[in-house]
Length: 513
Image (cartoon, rainbow, N blue to C red; front, side, top):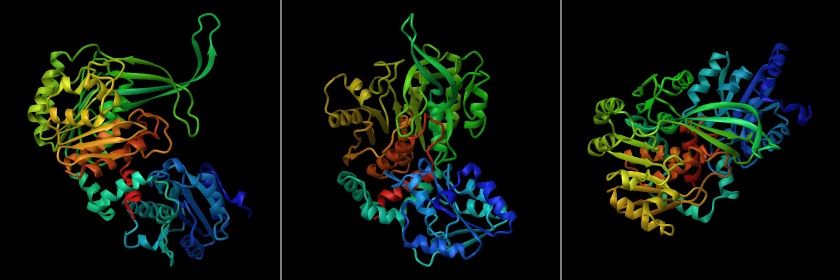
């Protein structure tokens, strides 16, 4: 069989394997990233093939690989061709999912093989093996552990193809001195014990895709053909979704209207419909509609125009009282309260005063946008924050100066807010962290490909909040936040939350020696 005929699109894989099964063939299945083929893989595939007639190898498609910056090292086409070139391999397919479950369901193997390192769960970094085993049993197959020679693709790539700069390597070495890589899984798992309350502006992001046709002949305005649209959970609701991946006891307090289009989004986003949200008919749910061009592979999403639907001014008194009532129930039991203040009215003076007086640990993200530019400043609206994060525009506005020294202004702001942690995220430049006793830490951007920057800061503050609540070292918190931001910029808007498995894999890849 030629190499090209071995490579099967995932949509056709189930039918292709089913035909072989009808011929009486015993199907064996291996799944992984297979970023760099090495001798360990050869032994793995040969021993797997010996257990049946047909060996199907599936690999996670590049956009779903969560192994840290620069991974996968080789693109989907090269990885598929490398696998298909092996004599032991009969079929190869790239899988458009982050885990193995969908691949197993498509292949329905008689035998599903994992490396011997998984037999004692040593290789199961992200805890997905039980799901794999359950899926194999569900389709009528059995597990087998193969591979008499074991190597690590990640370790080989890090040793010989490391794309990390000296600055990033030094940053990671500093973390490794106080937090060994083998401790990371326990640290991330312990986030699950935290009770976080997210309070702030719930936003819905609508992406309307248009094909730009040019300028109209009469009025010289941009003309586009409508292609489709999707509405997503954003703002405080997106942060709630990020946090629940790590801390299932997270609650959300905010205000949302009762528009018909809102209901299915809430059902899909909330653990319990409504959770601690205040709902009122007649209240305009915050909706930000962005007109965008179709996504081009490897390029940042092109945004053409934006329209905002929102209430003017702060909350009516009755809604403010309803929010305070929910906060008084949740805040005393919380480990941390994360304020997502987008300046759209929910964070009234009374609500801010209550949280600054009663939150056991208060994390604040006070954002500047086109609706509140120069008015929603953290040092004008808050006098206390145990931790905070802001971007370059926001620190310039808070300082009230065009030319500033970032370190000086971050420290000054942290002292004003009596903070224990502060971060300045500078997009493609760096993230700067500060603590009163430890001074400054710097981490360069980790994302290699940027699709959409919307929501990256929200992902950062979500992970930072968990780290602050667990009192982790500031450099480790910064790394986890940067990994969350790096994953977020690869997603259009807040299409999906950042993944626990992805953050953990990325951290392990960076901190493993």
